[in-house]
Image (cartoon, rainbow, N blue to C red):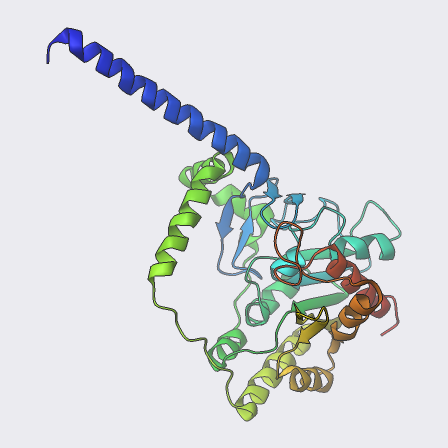
Length: 344
């Protein structure tokens, strides 16, 4: 091919590349405003397995609509000091994290409004991460108490009471606490490579989106594993009793377990509450170990009966499924307020 024919081809290739880059940047800008991930910092000897990059802004629009800033500890809270004289730690998974609802609508935010006297302090502090379920909470409970030694109350959020023998056995083998892994300290120890990686993840969220899509496609091709079964009642009771007794012994304040069951909207318009078969046994073991058990079954049913309010789901997903919505958070805040505002 002579030079006269090469130049038009080269110009065409350059145009294609420029168009591809421009299109990618446009899509990235849209994703940036719609679903922005935050840098993830893993750790081993702390309450949670990881925290988000302190100071980052989290944007979540694929389920509900939330924008939150990460505080200096790596959790999603207003960056305010904890209330003097003891605060309440709200600990749980993505439901407690509540990034699907707007700022101020999470149950921890609502409780801060109703319980605190000083607007420049937090009386309820949200310590939660995706997948931070009861076994993980027990596993990191010692570290949690060490991280917040002045806490007066700890509220543990759970959506089920069904746990396997391995989950419960591993939970009891608790992690240590290392002060250097606190959010305010661990950032200074990160490598340049890690910092650049987090910056790229936050600046170009399209990369994370593509990675998730590839992972989803790979998962479709993988065989579906059978869900591990809950152990026999006797073994289950022994392990849960041991786990609850352990966390009770490690905390001198008030322990509350918040249980919110799933719901299902039937074809006839009624709402069914789907509770774990082990719920009653779990609640009894909480009472045995001096732990308060707040069951959201009745408040959920009453809200639907009175107002057709559903605690899960959003207009951009499906009502009755997914994460807690503003109604669910409001009902939980009301239930917990009645408990926390009492003398115990």
